[in-house]
Length: 279
Ligand code: FE
Ligand code: FE
Ligand code: ZN
Image (cartoon, rainbow, N blue to C red; front, side, top):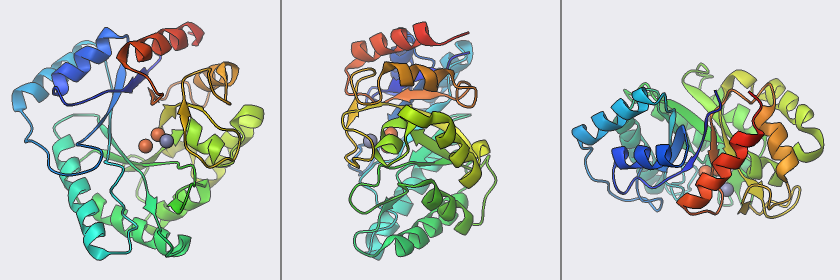
């Protein structure tokens, strides 16, 4: 079954979010765990979460992918900022324990002039602490475009973070592949998708690939700009997106759209992609 969905708002609660997803033909959804700029969060409403879980089971929807606030920087130079990122993400993981099968995705971080080596060290330490949290939720590192001082713009950097965090098993730590980011970061999915996936397998291992952020890219190959485009309106293009969703190594993964869209626009992209997915 094609698992396709998009990023939605959690502001109306979990049940409202999954109803919205189902209403636009989505079977999976992504949401920010809290205001993407960070900050406090209201306590979970057990009835709301129960209704979400009931609807997810009834409609075989999921996995729900929770996205950490992107302003958190596990590689920050200041210890108080690293502490804040860790406290926030640990709290997120504990909350996600009430959503069976959910996954938690975070941006590795920016080394902010400390250098990639130091950044990788700090992020692997962060990941090690996250793994100490009493939550079964699988943690995903997102492939980044490598803009500015972003760490995780190459498969090698992600593999290094995972290995230095003690090489936890693939059901504890995985990777979320963002198609815009990797193309932007210098992986040529347009001309050589097979080779990119072989490289991912060799360096990270395909067993760790758990989710795909399905985005077109406003800018071209290796531009390191990280600007998402709607499906078919960017430099990746509809033919390649069609190859991506049907690729034997990818087609069973959940795909999450993060294209610049409102909810009806997501609905139209989901319908388009369903028509291009080969059963
Ligand atoms: Fe992201
Ligand atoms: Fe993404
Ligand atoms: Zn992005």
